[in-house]
Image 1: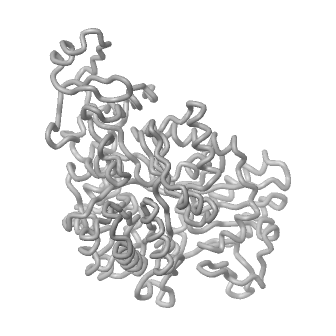
Image 2 (image 1 turned 90 degrees about the horizontal axis):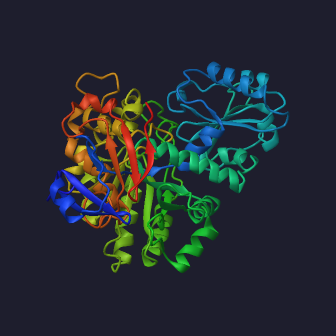
Image 3 (image 1 turned 180 degrees about the vertical axis):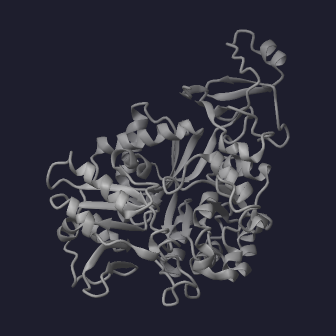
Length: 520
C-alpha cells in the first residue's frame, strides 16, 4: 500500500516493525543471521484497520442469543423457547440481531414471546441497535405500561386499539428498559472483548476503532493490556453520554500508548438514529411515512459546543449522522467549530455513515478537512427498501461513495460490525459492485457510485490509518512501520472482483508475531 513501492518480494521484520523491504537476496545478505520464512508466493498485505466497529456488542453476541439472519418473529420465539429451558426463573434472557429495518413495516407484538417466557424477562436488541423487542415480564420490571409516555427521541410502539405496549421500543425508548438489565461484570467484559478480538483476527483486522467506548469498557481494555492479553490495537472513541469520563479526558488530554495498543483521542457523538427505524433525521418527511421526519439526538449548538471543547483539548470528534438533516447539522457544527478553534489545524473531524446527504452538501466536507467514514455493506443491506423510504431524488445522495471521493475528501471504509458482517473482503466486494453476494441487482444498485479496487484497498488500510492519525506508522509495509500484516489465500490485486467473496486470511501477524492461523 505504498504508492512509491507498490509491491516487493521480501521483507525483514524485527522488534515489532518492518526493518526493510526489497529482494530476497538483498534481505538475506543484510540480515545473514535472521530466520527465513518462505511464503511460497503467497500474497502479503498490511493488517486491515477496522475503522468503525463495536467489539463489545460483537463479543456479547457470543454470550447472548444470536438472532442474526432469522427471517421471522416466529423463528426468534423458537430460539428464545430453547434458551428458556436452560435458564433459571427470573434471570434475564438477552439477545441481538433481528433486523429492525426489514421488520419496520410490520413490527411484531410480544404475545408469543411472552407465552414462551412467562417467568424470565427477555430483551432482544435489533441488528443495528436502534430498536429492541421485550416480553411482558421485562416491560413490567421497567414499569412500561399504557400510561408510560414516549420519551424524547423514542417510541413505545403500542397496539392501535388498546394502547398497550407491543414490546417494541425504538431509539431512546430502549433506555427505559436497558437501565433494568444487570450490567456485565468486569471479567465478563474482558471475556466478551477477547472473543470479539479473536474473531477480528480471523479476518485480518489488526486494529479496531471502537466506536462507542464506555468507562467500564476502557478499564477492561486496560486490564487486558496490563496482562499482555490485548491481541489487537484499539483506537478508542469515548461515548459522549458518559459525562464524568468525558470531563476527565478533556481535562487531562489524550492517552497515547507508546506501544500503540490502546489510544484514546476521539469522542463519539450521535446526531440522529437509523434509517431502518425511521430515526434518521430528514429535512423533509419520509417518502413511505409522510408524518415522520426522524429525530435529532444532539442539536447543532450542542455538537458545536462539544466539538469546540474537544478541539481545544486536542481530541478528534466522530459524529454519527445518517439522514440529510443530521448531516447538515454536522457540517454546520464542524464548520463553526473549526472557525472557533483555528489553532486545531489538523483536526480530522470525522463524519460517520453519511448515508443520506443533500447533493449540494457533498462538496462541502473536503474543504473543511473532514474525514468520511462509510460502510459499504450498509448499502446492500438497505437497498431493498432505501429508495422507498427516501424517494427517487434523495436516494441520489445515498451511500454516495464516488460522489464524495471525487471531491477529494479523505475516506475510510469499514463494517460497523456486528450490525453488518465484519469480513472486510465482503465490504470491499460491495464497494466495488454495489451488489449482494448473489450478484444482485445486475450491474449494481446505482453503479455510478462504485469504487475502484485501488481506492477500496487504500480506504481499508492507509485511509483508515489516516482517520486515526496513524498514517506515519500503520497501514503500509514500509520500513519503520508496525509489523502488522496478513497472509492471503490469493492475490488480492489480480483476482476477479467476485473472488473477494471467497478470499480468506491464512495467517495474521501483530508486531511480527503470529496471532492467528487458519486451520482447514
